Image (cartoon, rainbow, N blue to C red; front, side, top):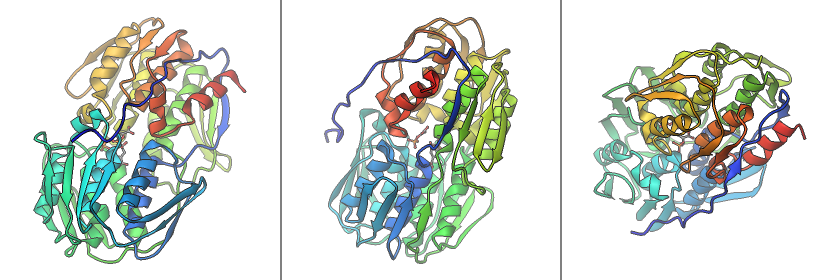
Length: 432
Ligand SMILES: O=C(O)C1=C[C@@H](OP(=O)(O)O)[C@@H](O)[C@H](O)C1
Ligand SMILES: C=C(OP(=O)(O)O)C(=O)O
Protein backbone atom coordinates (compact mmCIF):
# COMPACT_ATOMS: atom_id res chain seq x y z
CA UNK A 1 0.00 0.00 0.00
CA UNK A 2 1.29 3.49 -0.82
CA UNK A 3 1.86 5.85 2.05
CA UNK A 4 -1.21 7.96 2.67
CA UNK A 5 0.72 11.13 3.29
CA UNK A 6 2.33 13.03 0.44
CA UNK A 7 5.83 14.41 0.92
CA UNK A 8 5.47 17.37 3.25
CA UNK A 9 7.11 20.70 2.50
CA UNK A 10 10.02 21.69 4.70
CA UNK A 11 11.46 25.08 5.61
CA UNK A 12 14.97 25.74 6.90
CA UNK A 13 15.11 28.22 9.80
CA UNK A 14 17.91 29.99 11.63
CA UNK A 15 17.15 30.04 15.33
CA UNK A 16 17.11 33.59 16.71
CA UNK A 17 19.73 34.47 19.31
CA UNK A 18 18.67 36.31 22.46
CA UNK A 19 20.38 39.56 23.38
CA UNK A 20 18.14 40.21 26.40
CA UNK A 21 16.37 38.08 28.98
CA UNK A 22 13.01 36.90 27.62
CA UNK A 23 9.87 38.23 29.32
CA UNK A 24 6.79 36.45 28.05
CA UNK A 25 3.22 35.98 29.28
CA UNK A 26 1.50 33.60 26.92
CA UNK A 27 -1.74 31.69 26.35
CA UNK A 28 -0.57 28.51 24.67
CA UNK A 29 -2.81 26.11 22.70
CA UNK A 30 -4.35 23.06 24.39
CA UNK A 31 -2.57 19.86 25.36
CA UNK A 32 -2.08 17.39 22.53
CA UNK A 33 -2.56 14.44 24.86
CA UNK A 34 -5.74 15.77 26.47
CA UNK A 35 -7.24 16.83 23.12
CA UNK A 36 -6.56 13.38 21.61
CA UNK A 37 -8.17 11.56 24.53
CA UNK A 38 -11.15 13.91 24.63
CA UNK A 39 -11.76 13.31 20.91
CA UNK A 40 -11.67 9.51 21.30
CA UNK A 41 -13.83 9.42 24.43
CA UNK A 42 -16.32 11.82 22.83
CA UNK A 43 -16.54 9.68 19.69
CA UNK A 44 -17.36 6.62 21.82
CA UNK A 45 -19.86 8.40 24.07
CA UNK A 46 -23.64 8.13 23.94
CA UNK A 47 -24.24 11.85 23.42
CA UNK A 48 -22.57 14.98 22.04
CA UNK A 49 -19.48 16.54 23.61
CA UNK A 50 -17.73 19.86 23.32
CA UNK A 51 -13.97 20.39 23.56
CA UNK A 52 -13.18 23.89 24.82
CA UNK A 53 -9.81 25.38 23.76
CA UNK A 54 -8.62 22.21 21.97
CA UNK A 55 -5.23 21.99 20.29
CA UNK A 56 -5.42 22.68 16.58
CA UNK A 57 -2.26 21.07 15.25
CA UNK A 58 -1.34 18.29 12.85
CA UNK A 59 -1.71 15.44 15.38
CA UNK A 60 -5.13 16.49 16.64
CA UNK A 61 -6.48 17.39 13.20
CA UNK A 62 -5.47 13.90 12.05
CA UNK A 63 -7.31 12.40 15.03
CA UNK A 64 -10.42 14.44 14.22
CA UNK A 65 -10.21 13.47 10.54
CA UNK A 66 -9.71 9.80 11.39
CA UNK A 67 -12.80 9.72 13.59
CA UNK A 68 -14.75 11.57 10.90
CA UNK A 69 -13.74 8.85 8.43
CA UNK A 70 -15.37 6.33 10.78
CA UNK A 71 -18.65 8.28 10.56
CA UNK A 72 -18.36 10.42 13.71
CA UNK A 73 -19.51 14.04 13.24
CA UNK A 74 -16.56 16.14 14.39
CA UNK A 75 -16.89 19.87 13.85
CA UNK A 76 -13.61 21.75 14.15
CA UNK A 77 -14.60 25.01 12.44
CA UNK A 78 -14.51 27.04 15.63
CA UNK A 79 -10.95 27.30 16.98
CA UNK A 80 -12.15 27.49 20.58
CA UNK A 81 -14.88 24.90 20.52
CA UNK A 82 -14.89 21.56 18.77
CA UNK A 83 -18.16 19.61 18.82
CA UNK A 84 -18.28 15.81 18.55
CA UNK A 85 -21.56 14.00 17.77
CA UNK A 86 -21.07 10.23 17.98
CA UNK A 87 -22.64 8.05 15.29
CA UNK A 88 -22.53 4.33 14.60
CA UNK A 89 -18.92 3.57 13.61
CA UNK A 90 -18.70 2.58 9.94
CA UNK A 91 -16.12 1.01 7.65
CA UNK A 92 -14.59 0.67 5.17
CA UNK A 93 -12.37 3.59 5.99
CA UNK A 94 -8.79 4.80 5.73
CA UNK A 95 -7.02 6.67 8.50
CA UNK A 96 -3.88 8.74 8.02
CA UNK A 97 -1.94 8.71 11.28
CA UNK A 98 0.74 11.13 10.02
CA UNK A 99 3.50 10.74 12.59
CA UNK A 100 1.13 10.82 15.57
CA UNK A 101 1.63 8.13 18.19
CA UNK A 102 -1.77 9.01 19.62
CA UNK A 103 -3.57 8.32 16.32
CA UNK A 104 -1.68 5.11 15.51
CA UNK A 105 -2.12 3.72 19.08
CA UNK A 106 -5.58 5.02 20.05
CA UNK A 107 -7.14 4.46 16.60
CA UNK A 108 -6.96 0.66 16.09
CA UNK A 109 -8.95 -0.23 19.26
CA UNK A 110 -11.68 2.17 18.11
CA UNK A 111 -11.57 0.65 14.63
CA UNK A 112 -12.28 -2.76 16.17
CA UNK A 113 -15.74 -1.39 17.03
CA UNK A 114 -16.39 -0.38 13.41
CA UNK A 115 -18.50 -2.57 11.15
CA UNK A 116 -15.96 -2.91 8.34
CA UNK A 117 -12.26 -2.82 7.50
CA UNK A 118 -10.24 0.21 8.56
CA UNK A 119 -6.80 0.75 7.05
CA UNK A 120 -4.13 2.78 8.86
CA UNK A 121 -0.96 4.26 7.40
CA UNK A 122 1.08 7.41 7.84
CA UNK A 123 4.35 9.19 7.17
CA UNK A 124 7.24 6.93 6.11
CA UNK A 125 8.80 7.24 9.58
CA UNK A 126 5.51 6.23 11.22
CA UNK A 127 5.98 2.78 9.71
CA UNK A 128 9.05 2.32 11.90
CA UNK A 129 7.37 3.28 15.19
CA UNK A 130 6.53 0.39 17.56
CA UNK A 131 2.98 -0.96 17.43
CA UNK A 132 3.27 -4.77 17.70
CA UNK A 133 2.33 -5.25 21.38
CA UNK A 134 -0.82 -3.14 20.97
CA UNK A 135 -1.92 -5.09 17.89
CA UNK A 136 -1.17 -8.44 19.54
CA UNK A 137 -3.13 -7.30 22.57
CA UNK A 138 -6.10 -6.32 20.42
CA UNK A 139 -5.94 -9.67 18.62
CA UNK A 140 -6.06 -11.44 21.98
CA UNK A 141 -9.18 -9.40 22.75
CA UNK A 142 -10.90 -10.72 19.62
CA UNK A 143 -9.99 -8.32 16.81
CA UNK A 144 -8.69 -9.52 13.44
CA UNK A 145 -5.80 -7.38 12.16
CA UNK A 146 -3.55 -7.65 9.11
CA UNK A 147 -0.30 -5.76 9.66
CA UNK A 148 2.94 -5.24 7.75
CA UNK A 149 5.64 -7.94 8.28
CA UNK A 150 7.31 -5.47 10.68
CA UNK A 151 4.27 -5.82 12.96
CA UNK A 152 3.29 -2.18 12.41
CA UNK A 153 1.95 0.13 9.70
CA UNK A 154 0.41 -0.18 7.21
CA UNK A 155 -2.33 -2.28 8.78
CA UNK A 156 -5.99 -3.14 8.44
CA UNK A 157 -8.34 -3.69 11.38
CA UNK A 158 -11.26 -5.89 10.33
CA UNK A 159 -13.96 -4.40 12.52
CA UNK A 160 -17.12 -6.40 13.13
CA UNK A 161 -19.02 -3.84 15.17
CA UNK A 162 -18.05 -5.40 18.49
CA UNK A 163 -14.96 -6.38 20.47
CA UNK A 164 -15.15 -9.21 22.98
CA UNK A 165 -12.56 -7.71 25.34
CA UNK A 166 -11.41 -9.56 28.47
CA UNK A 167 -7.94 -10.18 29.90
CA UNK A 168 -4.71 -9.49 28.08
CA UNK A 169 -1.00 -9.27 28.94
CA UNK A 170 1.24 -6.99 26.88
CA UNK A 171 4.75 -5.56 27.06
CA UNK A 172 4.18 -1.79 27.09
CA UNK A 173 7.80 -0.84 27.76
CA UNK A 174 8.09 0.67 24.27
CA UNK A 175 5.16 3.05 24.80
CA UNK A 176 2.57 3.84 27.44
CA UNK A 177 0.24 4.56 24.52
CA UNK A 178 -0.29 0.80 24.01
CA UNK A 179 -2.03 0.68 27.39
CA UNK A 180 -3.84 4.00 26.93
CA UNK A 181 -5.18 2.90 23.54
CA UNK A 182 -6.66 -0.31 24.93
CA UNK A 183 -8.15 1.42 27.96
CA UNK A 184 -9.78 4.33 26.10
CA UNK A 185 -11.97 2.08 23.93
CA UNK A 186 -12.51 -0.61 26.58
CA UNK A 187 -15.83 0.62 28.05
CA UNK A 188 -17.32 -0.25 24.66
CA UNK A 189 -15.87 -3.80 24.64
CA UNK A 190 -18.38 -6.54 25.60
CA UNK A 191 -16.37 -7.55 28.66
CA UNK A 192 -14.36 -4.37 29.17
CA UNK A 193 -10.67 -5.06 29.64
CA UNK A 194 -8.07 -6.22 32.13
CA UNK A 195 -4.63 -5.14 30.87
CA UNK A 196 -1.55 -6.54 32.54
CA UNK A 197 1.92 -5.24 31.70
CA UNK A 198 4.86 -7.65 31.74
CA UNK A 199 8.36 -6.50 30.83
CA UNK A 200 10.71 -3.59 31.53
CA UNK A 201 8.97 -0.60 33.17
CA UNK A 202 6.21 1.23 31.30
CA UNK A 203 7.34 4.81 30.58
CA UNK A 204 5.29 8.00 30.85
CA UNK A 205 3.26 7.08 33.96
CA UNK A 206 1.60 10.52 34.08
CA UNK A 207 0.08 9.87 30.66
CA UNK A 208 -1.48 6.66 31.99
CA UNK A 209 -2.93 8.58 34.93
CA UNK A 210 -4.29 11.12 32.42
CA UNK A 211 -6.02 8.25 30.58
CA UNK A 212 -7.68 6.78 33.68
CA UNK A 213 -8.65 10.23 34.99
CA UNK A 214 -10.34 11.16 31.70
CA UNK A 215 -12.06 7.77 31.42
CA UNK A 216 -13.53 8.28 34.90
CA UNK A 217 -14.58 11.82 34.00
CA UNK A 218 -16.54 10.33 31.08
CA UNK A 219 -18.27 7.89 33.41
CA UNK A 220 -16.15 4.73 33.06
CA UNK A 221 -15.43 2.44 36.00
CA UNK A 222 -11.64 2.08 36.18
CA UNK A 223 -9.33 0.36 38.66
CA UNK A 224 -5.66 1.29 38.40
CA UNK A 225 -4.80 0.60 42.04
CA UNK A 226 -2.39 -2.28 41.33
CA UNK A 227 0.96 -1.55 39.64
CA UNK A 228 1.07 -2.70 36.01
CA UNK A 229 -2.61 -3.70 36.03
CA UNK A 230 -5.55 -1.72 34.68
CA UNK A 231 -9.21 -2.76 34.75
CA UNK A 232 -11.96 -0.99 32.79
CA UNK A 233 -15.52 -2.23 33.19
CA UNK A 234 -17.87 -2.35 30.22
CA UNK A 235 -20.36 0.51 30.32
CA UNK A 236 -21.55 3.71 28.74
CA UNK A 237 -19.44 6.80 28.24
CA UNK A 238 -21.20 10.15 28.65
CA UNK A 239 -20.96 13.10 26.32
CA UNK A 240 -19.62 16.08 28.27
CA UNK A 241 -17.87 19.43 28.23
CA UNK A 242 -14.09 18.97 28.09
CA UNK A 243 -11.95 21.91 29.22
CA UNK A 244 -8.60 21.33 27.51
CA UNK A 245 -5.62 22.53 29.57
CA UNK A 246 -2.78 24.53 27.96
CA UNK A 247 -0.08 22.19 26.64
CA UNK A 248 2.57 21.85 29.35
CA UNK A 249 4.96 19.92 27.09
CA UNK A 250 4.57 22.59 24.43
CA UNK A 251 5.41 25.23 27.05
CA UNK A 252 8.71 23.63 28.04
CA UNK A 253 10.85 25.22 25.28
CA UNK A 254 9.64 28.66 26.43
CA UNK A 255 10.39 27.78 30.05
CA UNK A 256 13.84 26.65 28.89
CA UNK A 257 14.28 30.09 27.30
CA UNK A 258 13.67 31.67 30.71
CA UNK A 259 16.46 29.50 32.15
CA UNK A 260 18.96 30.16 29.35
CA UNK A 261 18.45 33.93 29.20
CA UNK A 262 17.78 34.65 32.88
CA UNK A 263 14.28 35.75 31.95
CA UNK A 264 10.69 35.01 32.89
CA UNK A 265 7.90 33.09 31.13
CA UNK A 266 4.32 32.80 32.38
CA UNK A 267 1.95 30.22 30.96
CA UNK A 268 -1.47 31.80 31.43
CA UNK A 269 -4.72 29.94 31.98
CA UNK A 270 -3.00 27.25 34.06
CA UNK A 271 -5.60 25.09 35.89
CA UNK A 272 -5.56 24.35 39.64
CA UNK A 273 -5.77 20.60 39.34
CA UNK A 274 -3.83 19.67 36.22
CA UNK A 275 -3.85 16.27 34.50
CA UNK A 276 -0.34 16.97 33.18
CA UNK A 277 2.94 16.22 35.03
CA UNK A 278 3.47 19.68 36.49
CA UNK A 279 5.05 18.42 39.72
CA UNK A 280 7.68 16.42 37.84
CA UNK A 281 8.38 19.43 35.63
CA UNK A 282 8.62 21.80 38.59
CA UNK A 283 11.22 19.53 40.27
CA UNK A 284 13.18 19.19 37.04
CA UNK A 285 13.27 22.92 36.25
CA UNK A 286 14.24 23.69 39.84
CA UNK A 287 17.18 21.30 39.62
CA UNK A 288 18.21 22.88 36.32
CA UNK A 289 18.38 26.26 38.06
CA UNK A 290 14.90 27.71 37.53
CA UNK A 291 12.23 28.86 39.92
CA UNK A 292 8.65 27.75 39.28
CA UNK A 293 5.61 29.42 40.84
CA UNK A 294 1.88 29.01 40.30
CA UNK A 295 -0.46 31.89 41.12
CA UNK A 296 -3.49 33.67 39.71
CA UNK A 297 -1.41 34.88 36.75
CA UNK A 298 -0.49 31.33 35.72
CA UNK A 299 2.52 29.02 35.81
CA UNK A 300 5.69 31.12 35.87
CA UNK A 301 9.29 30.01 35.34
CA UNK A 302 12.16 32.35 36.15
CA UNK A 303 15.83 31.73 35.36
CA UNK A 304 19.14 33.26 36.34
CA UNK A 305 20.96 32.66 33.09
CA UNK A 306 22.94 29.83 34.68
CA UNK A 307 21.74 26.32 33.94
CA UNK A 308 22.88 23.50 36.22
CA UNK A 309 23.94 20.07 35.04
CA UNK A 310 21.74 17.24 36.38
CA UNK A 311 21.63 13.49 36.77
CA UNK A 312 17.97 12.68 36.15
CA UNK A 313 15.69 9.77 35.38
CA UNK A 314 13.39 11.20 32.71
CA UNK A 315 11.31 8.06 32.10
CA UNK A 316 8.09 9.68 33.36
CA UNK A 317 8.50 12.78 31.20
CA UNK A 318 10.62 11.33 28.42
CA UNK A 319 9.02 13.42 25.68
CA UNK A 320 10.84 16.41 27.20
CA UNK A 321 14.31 14.87 26.69
CA UNK A 322 15.26 16.98 23.64
CA UNK A 323 14.59 20.24 25.51
CA UNK A 324 16.41 19.01 28.61
CA UNK A 325 19.37 17.85 26.51
CA UNK A 326 19.53 21.30 24.93
CA UNK A 327 19.69 22.86 28.38
CA UNK A 328 22.34 20.33 29.40
CA UNK A 329 24.75 21.37 26.64
CA UNK A 330 24.49 24.95 27.92
CA UNK A 331 24.88 23.97 31.58
CA UNK A 332 27.64 24.65 34.11
CA UNK A 333 28.39 20.95 34.74
CA UNK A 334 27.93 17.55 33.07
CA UNK A 335 24.54 15.83 32.94
CA UNK A 336 23.24 12.32 32.66
CA UNK A 337 19.70 11.84 31.32
CA UNK A 338 18.58 8.29 32.14
CA UNK A 339 15.65 5.89 31.73
CA UNK A 340 14.88 6.92 28.18
CA UNK A 341 15.59 3.88 25.98
CA UNK A 342 12.08 3.99 24.53
CA UNK A 343 12.48 7.43 22.96
CA UNK A 344 14.39 5.66 20.19
CA UNK A 345 10.83 4.84 19.01
CA UNK A 346 9.52 8.41 19.13
CA UNK A 347 9.25 10.65 16.03
CA UNK A 348 12.87 9.69 15.36
CA UNK A 349 15.47 7.77 17.36
CA UNK A 350 15.89 10.72 19.71
CA UNK A 351 18.95 9.36 21.52
CA UNK A 352 20.86 8.91 18.28
CA UNK A 353 19.55 12.16 16.78
CA UNK A 354 20.42 14.24 19.84
CA UNK A 355 23.87 12.69 20.17
CA UNK A 356 24.61 13.40 16.51
CA UNK A 357 23.24 16.94 16.29
CA UNK A 358 24.53 18.18 19.65
CA UNK A 359 27.97 16.78 18.84
CA UNK A 360 27.77 18.64 15.52
CA UNK A 361 27.46 21.93 17.43
CA UNK A 362 30.56 21.10 19.47
CA UNK A 363 29.09 19.40 22.55
CA UNK A 364 30.63 16.28 24.06
CA UNK A 365 27.83 13.68 24.13
CA UNK A 366 27.86 9.94 24.77
CA UNK A 367 24.83 7.89 23.82
CA UNK A 368 24.18 4.64 25.72
CA UNK A 369 21.35 2.18 25.20
CA UNK A 370 19.06 4.13 27.52
CA UNK A 371 20.75 7.43 28.36
CA UNK A 372 22.65 10.48 27.21
CA UNK A 373 25.79 11.73 28.96
CA UNK A 374 26.44 15.35 28.18
CA UNK A 375 29.59 17.30 29.01
CA UNK A 376 29.24 20.99 28.15
CA UNK A 377 31.91 22.57 25.95
CA UNK A 378 32.02 25.84 24.02
CA UNK A 379 29.53 25.52 21.16
CA UNK A 380 29.49 26.85 17.61
CA UNK A 381 26.69 27.50 15.13
CA UNK A 382 26.01 25.12 12.28
CA UNK A 383 23.44 22.89 10.66
CA UNK A 384 20.97 21.00 12.86
CA UNK A 385 18.91 18.17 11.30
CA UNK A 386 15.43 18.01 12.83
CA UNK A 387 14.43 14.57 11.46
CA UNK A 388 10.74 15.60 11.10
CA UNK A 389 10.68 15.82 14.89
CA UNK A 390 9.02 18.84 16.52
CA UNK A 391 10.95 18.38 19.74
CA UNK A 392 14.32 18.21 17.94
CA UNK A 393 13.37 21.61 16.48
CA UNK A 394 12.64 22.86 20.01
CA UNK A 395 16.08 21.65 21.14
CA UNK A 396 17.81 23.54 18.32
CA UNK A 397 15.81 26.70 19.06
CA UNK A 398 16.81 26.59 22.74
CA UNK A 399 20.51 26.27 21.92
CA UNK A 400 20.18 29.00 19.30
CA UNK A 401 19.21 31.46 22.03
CA UNK A 402 22.81 31.32 23.26
CA UNK A 403 24.69 30.21 20.14
CA UNK A 404 24.43 32.31 16.97
CA UNK A 405 23.94 30.52 13.65
CA UNK A 406 22.07 27.33 14.64
CA UNK A 407 20.41 26.43 11.34
CA UNK A 408 17.51 23.98 11.50
CA UNK A 409 17.01 21.83 8.41
CA UNK A 410 13.26 22.28 8.87
CA UNK A 411 10.97 24.12 11.26
CA UNK A 412 7.59 23.10 9.80
CA UNK A 413 7.77 19.87 11.81
CA UNK A 414 6.77 21.95 14.85
CA UNK A 415 3.24 22.00 13.35
CA UNK A 416 2.81 18.49 14.76
CA UNK A 417 1.86 20.02 18.08
CA UNK A 418 2.25 23.81 17.80
CA UNK A 419 1.96 25.48 14.39
CA UNK A 420 2.50 28.86 16.09
CA UNK A 421 5.99 27.87 17.30
CA UNK A 422 8.28 29.73 14.82
CA UNK A 423 6.31 32.99 15.03
CA UNK A 424 5.79 32.85 18.79
CA UNK A 425 9.42 31.96 19.45
CA UNK A 426 10.78 34.76 17.25
CA UNK A 427 8.41 37.27 18.87
CA UNK A 428 9.54 36.13 22.32
CA UNK A 429 13.22 36.58 21.42
CA UNK A 430 12.83 39.97 19.77
CA UNK A 431 10.41 41.14 22.47
CA UNK A 432 7.69 42.07 19.91
O1 LIG B 1 -0.42 9.25 25.61
C1 LIG B 1 0.11 10.30 25.24
O2 LIG B 1 -0.57 11.31 24.92
C2 LIG B 1 1.57 10.37 25.18
C3 LIG B 1 2.33 9.45 25.85
C4 LIG B 1 3.80 9.41 25.80
O3 LIG B 1 4.16 8.39 24.89
P1 LIG B 1 5.29 7.27 25.21
O4 LIG B 1 4.85 6.51 26.40
O5 LIG B 1 5.34 6.48 23.95
O6 LIG B 1 6.55 8.04 25.45
C5 LIG B 1 4.38 10.74 25.33
O7 LIG B 1 5.76 10.63 25.10
C6 LIG B 1 3.66 11.21 24.08
O8 LIG B 1 4.19 12.41 23.61
C7 LIG B 1 2.19 11.46 24.40
C1 LIG C 1 6.52 11.23 21.50
C2 LIG C 1 5.71 12.22 21.09
O1 LIG C 1 4.60 12.10 20.34
P1 LIG C 1 3.65 10.90 19.92
O2 LIG C 1 2.30 11.21 20.52
O3 LIG C 1 3.61 10.96 18.43
O4 LIG C 1 4.25 9.62 20.44
C3 LIG C 1 6.02 13.62 21.44
O5 LIG C 1 5.14 14.48 21.20
O6 LIG C 1 7.11 13.91 21.95
